[in-house]
Length: 157
Image: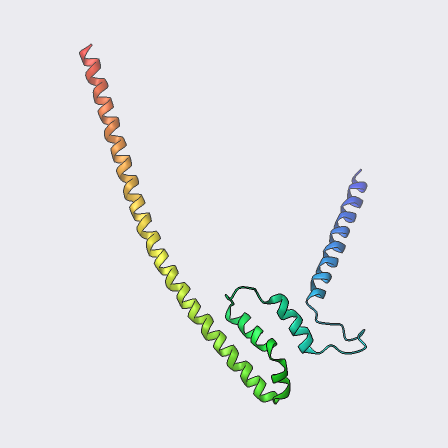
């Protein structure tokens, strides 16, 4: 019986391992632009990035700075191909710097909003504890009055 249990456990573990490996290989293969070993004609980056841009770009106008840079880089592949490599690297660095600045500005804005919400939360927590104390005090007073009434009723009898 114990041997059958071990065989089943090993078979189950093997199945899980093979299944997870197959899914991870499939997930990794989806992000690969192409396999150059099997291609007769190499795929250029402008074709790949244009195809990814159509899928990745949202329909709305709210894009993060990183998405904005990716869209800018992929929408002008001809300009970067014709300019020297140094100019394209410098422009890429400038775009990354501007994206980093925008992200830092967003971070500052988020921190300010968080601080505002945190102060509101602390204020509400303080008010809540004060109300809770008032409720408990009022309940004690009511209980005292009820016990006093009971004592008076007992004395009257």
